[in-house]
Length: 417
Image 1: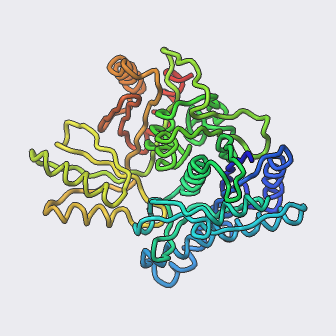
Image 2: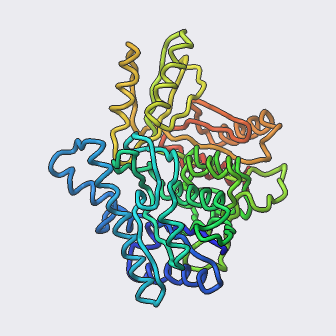
Image 3: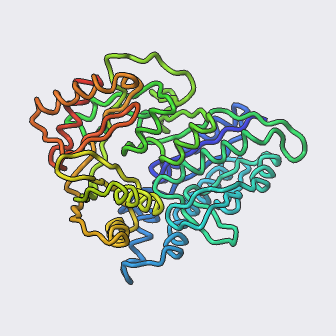
């Protein structure tokens, strides 16, 4: 039995017309002899009925502060609705299917509400569905604790669900009644043609962004961590750790351009970076202290809260932190708690800065030369840099929100294209 895990984003199921297109992709896989396990995100986006954002607003009208446990219970509803809807669509087309919540599919998590991590998968129910020849639909973005509390897996958590299910099926050699399993590369279906060289919304001309045919696992992880809407960071890290190949493509047409991660690495072009990534609306604060241990303690506590943050170097402060905002939780309050717990004060700015990053295998071993090039490009565009950071294959620059799109555009034009 050859199984394929397919993950569909919220846009893929936001309307009846899109649901029918999504159903075609699932039926195509089934008709080719594959056995689909389908992970579905919540229907649509903010402003559309049954989207997670609208469900949260419904309760926030009563009071904006919601208990984390209750908030996770509420946010899990969007994926359950879309999962049941899609399973029903497939049944009307003559395909036997079953809809499972994350908990019913056996995703057991820790108790960190809002950003839980999967600790194990009890996949008996899922495997029994496959054994019975069913198309198995699993609600993404959610799991359940050992004592049956519903948790969510953070923004983009449906990607995490899909990678985790691919992993557990890959590590299950046989079904309960002995049939051997083979797993196809994970399919991530979105409304765009794969992973792009830049966010089209951050460019003056959206068409300037190109599809990246091949990415390494390291490039995928770096882009996710730095703000690209590629794959949730935890999902990318799990895919890298367990060498899970995946393909990102447009759900409207399997013949359109697509991006492969970890399948067949394309040749690295030494004169070109792979992509420019931007993370807008950052929360930024400085520590004006010579105590390096304090910065380390602050970083550890931010990690404990499972906040994504970037520590940048700057002449203006001993340590400058930029923290990614959260969709449904107050990151500012969490950061203030972290700072006050160490007995220090810090000025916090919200949304005035963005991080713009250059990513690619071409940067490996030649980071200093690439930093010189990127610095010259930004200086020529008269874009001030308010902090910088790097790792093995990325260079990041903190710029004002007003300069973000210009920074993306000039780096993209000169160092990617």
